[in-house]
Amino acid sequence: MAKARYIRKPMPVKHVIPFLSAQEAWFWYVRSERARREGARLTEAASAFTRPCEPDDIYRIIMGLYRRRTIGDQHLEVLAEFGWRECPPDARVRGEEHPFRLWDDALDRLTTPLKAKGIVRHDEFCGQVG
Image (cartoon, rainbow, N blue to C red; front, side):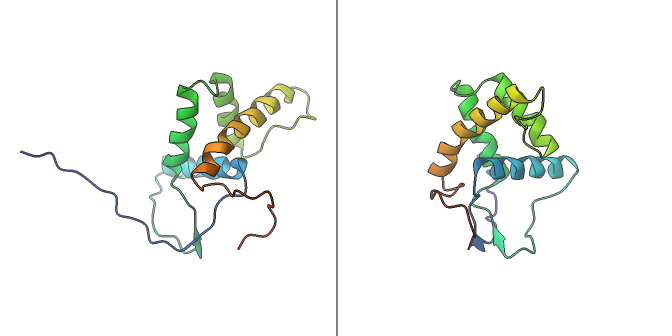
């Protein structure tokens, strides 16, 4: 007997707005994971736009970078810690100089695959959206 395959029902596509930066995408991913842990379900939102990916897409990209050793354990720890705080490390704060360098390096390495998939805008102008 054939194994049953489950295919996710596509979300209705509204106006798709890519993220302005890898940092914005990362914070969105962390907020989505936090909501998921609190029991929220992915449903059609009342907003007028949607994002070009699902949170799991960002997870797969970051773990791909980790498996290829493009980023390391320290990068992941800093991304997790400051992502959970929803505030990037500040290089001016004593004790956050090293986490700031790791944060910046990790997001720099994350930007290329996010742009390649259309999750982050390609242009350098990050002004008004829409």
